Amino acid sequence: MMLLIATALAADVDVGFDVMSHTQHDGLELEKDRVHAPGVRIGVDLNPRLSTVLTWHHRRVVEQLSLPDETALELRRGSDQWDIGLRADIYRLWRIEPYVLAQGSLLWSRTRLDDDTEDDLGVPIRGSAMDFGGLAVGGFDVILVDRRVGLRAGVEFGYGWLTPTEHEELGDVHQKGFLARGGLRMTF
Image (cartoon, rainbow, N blue to C red; front, side, top):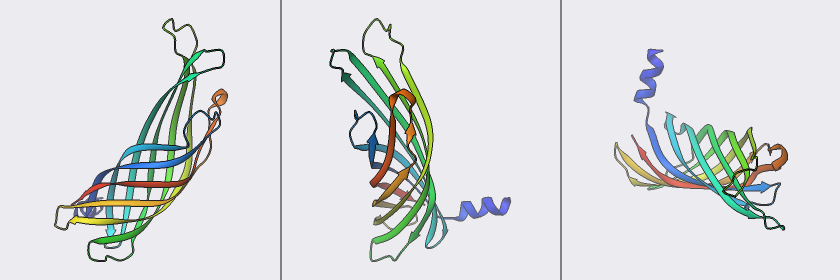
């Protein structure tokens, strides 16, 4: 156990913030096709070219809807997505470092549909679900500061697929398709 802790402390670590943009298909056809989520990213080097990467993204959307009979509704959606996987660096060229990354994903989503009136007599419809999937991306880092404590900016593009989220009366939401992520990271 002590050897494992010592190895983790001696390894190079990067910590940063990023934003993910992902395609989403909505069974209710009420939400946009592209969703954006801020997140946190942590990477730990296993060797000079291979590292483990853990990411977490959170998103929350509130929409005001109007039905044909002029009933006002409020749709709230929130989700937390955790991804863990391996990153393989290809070859460093000056201050640009391309890589490929494969991650498994876990998505916990929540949905609530409620009338948008002050009397609050309507009973809200709620749903939540847990889904699994994966991401495969290619990207590159631009090394801004190359010292023991460094700074990198990175972008990545690829494909993500998660099982459809079933929200009973509220329909299904399926995140699949093109994704893009970008952000800044500090390396230690």
